Each structure stands twice: as structure tokens, then as C-alpha cells.
Amino acid sequence: KASHGTALSGALHIIPRGGLARQNSSMTPEAIGAHSKRFPLGTKGDGVADAFSFPAAELLAATHTTSVPNIRTFFLGPAPPGLFKALELLGPRIVNTWPIRALVEKVVRREPSGPTPEQAAAVTMITSGEAVDESKEA
Image (cartoon, rainbow, N blue to C red; front, side):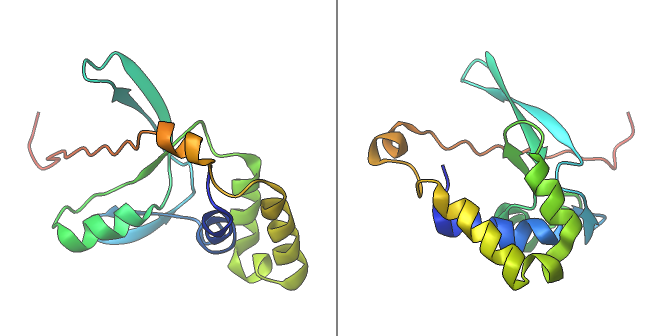
């Protein structure tokens, strides 16, 4: 469960600008959720988690710290909800107008902010990376 600040940052600043991926060493726009992937979980790979493409901060970090030409980041969960698509279609200029911004803030603040201490203690953060050398022939 995200804090109010994280949820508002995503709803007002990240999602309306749409997705990004690094392709051929350049940042390229793409729809949020344009790609989906299943990630193995567990030490024996005995579980899986579905994820959708999302321009996470790690995209920029990996871009600046590696020379990897193709990078895409994913957010754990099923395909993005309709609200993501609506905010992305409206774009930042519309989303940040007073009536839309006020509505988004009202919806976000209606929910509890962040996890309870018990929920936070029970969560395991999962980070997964994959490197593929696409220059080699099969």
C-alpha cells in the first residue's frame, strides 16, 4: 500500500506522462502496461508473479549507471487498472488542472496512507533484473 505522497506523485506526475523504456540507448515513450512479464519467485523458482511495464525510478538509475542499451522496468501486479489508462490519455496538462487534480487528491486521500506497521513488517521487497545480450546470433 503506497503512502499518499507516493500515490499522488504517481497519479499526478508519472502516469500522465506515459511510460518510458530505454531502447537502443535512447529513452522511448511507450504506453504504461504495453508489456507484461512473469517473474519467477522463491529460491527454487516454484512461484511466479505477473508484472506490467511501468517507468520506475530504477529505469533512470540503470540508464545512468550502466551502458545497457535496452532497459524496461516492471511493476508487480496484473495489467494496469483503467485509472492508469485514463490519466495517461488525459496527459499532464489536463491532469494538473484544478478540477482533475482536486478529484485525484480526494480519491487518493480517501484511502489509508501507506501500510500499517504490521503490514510493512510482513512485506518482502522483490527486485529482479535480467540482462540479455541481443547482439549475439542464436
